[in-house]
Length: 359
Ligand SMILES: *Cc1c(COP(=O)(O)O)cnc(C)c1O
Image (cartoon, rainbow, N blue to C red; front, side, top):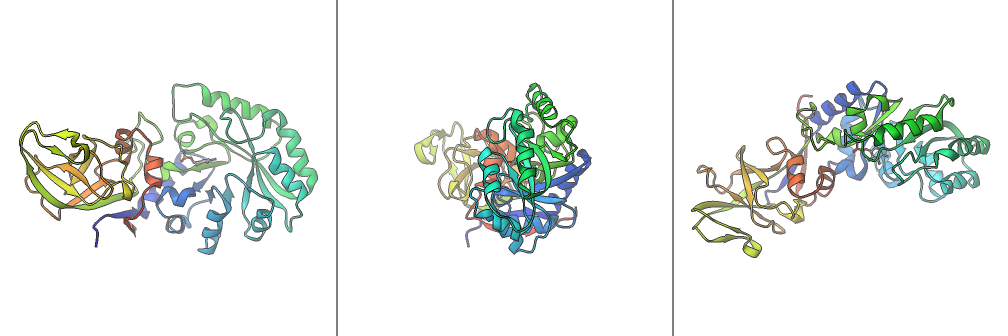
């Protein structure tokens, strides 16, 4: 069998959830959209069942997958419904829904519902992606109340740059939110991971923790380890070939890496078809038998090359960690010019194993 595999540590996931709870005084929804950022939505939600206050997903398909697996905690649809027909399923499966557009407000007004909805009115406080205009917030709240279809109503908003600590953007968004919602006495939710970890003024009744649960830092300047987070996913494989490389010889497609001294090079069974980023070039950290070394040349579809010159004991069959405990996924993402979010939710093909360390 191909040796590429993904090991997901559910104990670390629970540990990270507790880090979020420690920072954020109020309750915290565990964001498990996009298959729990590539970690497996059902195993992750099951692992958090005992302590999470609820879950958040992007769409009803993701929510139904959790309900079918027996997850009975609250589940918030972060983008609400895409068409009126979904409201019956929202009722049937007791889901919470964000209401972010005038069209969604009109949809609720026009659609009979069996039971009152639990709605989260989302305001656009500056990100300009989803959300109602702050100036319309009260009018929309009154329309939903007058529809008689909403039982519980909450406010929410989302930050554009909470990870950039020297920008005033988040403070401006908080002020905008407070002004638009003043005096309503409704529960509110503002913070993503970066808000939970770095913006106490944004802590409200409910946080929404995503990337931090998976042991990755939302900040470019602060590592996950500094934040007390534990890595959850390990992408592992093995060396399937080892060779000596004379000076002047090149490695891989395009020959982009050329040996400037006699080298020893290993081939690893992992490539971009597994979700390893092709744009991670020479120098990206890789661990062989627990020791750090570097990637060489271009990543292929199923394989990549690593430098074994300083690792004389490495051999065919040696264990390789592409990211996880020795190699932070954030370091790989940085080398590839992207963020861990994209890399984690792109992982595919490799076999998945869910382990449970002590949390
Ligand atoms: C994905 C998402 C989150 C979680 O964001 P992280 O940065 O991963 O913590 C929170 N809120 C909304 C609306 C989201 O779409």
